[in-house]
Image (tube, rainbow, N blue to C red; front, side, top):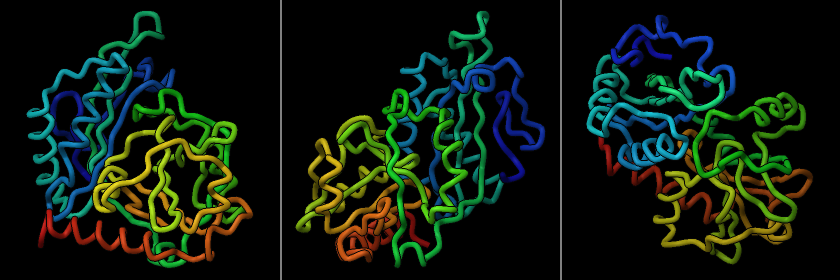
Length: 274
């Protein structure tokens, strides 16, 4: 974390930020968050992230006593205060203190500034491995703070040479624990349509590709795919070359994946040039 954050309605030293021990964010794991990058001191795709964060607050019934304009002002003040040229901003809204220790209360808003480290270039060039896991995130369309299963399961990923998991329900693929998932077949993109978070990077990749087949995706399609990749704010587009013991396509990142990665990187430079 960077030295300054937003808490209790003020920009304060990050080390002094606190949460009440009865807050639902702590005792029930109930809250929402969002995370986006800064590039050359400017938030990347800020409106998209604010739209999602505000909608998540409404859908989880957690009061958010700040307008879009308020949030934007706070974010830019934090970027300046922390000299955050290249990094990340994390917005967290806790479930609040509840009279019955269960129903959502008045949430507490935190906004943190952080360093951001991307995966090694080796992973982009060689691809990564995912492990399939049967699971659907609760209220998957909302970016909640509930990552309990993934955090617990992550203890064994490294031993198996995996970067992350790939969730599925029966025969149908949904998403990775912190990323959206894509397949490439005959040069065309396919991405799941349900039990997923509608990722901002996912949206931009679809735009750069000129569209995608957004529909149910089966486990069998993984076996027949030419390429696969995941997308997220912190990974951008990371090629997937192995799922469990199955090699994807040639076993190396393919031209569609690498081409879209380069297009996205170029788009970011155009939006926030040096």
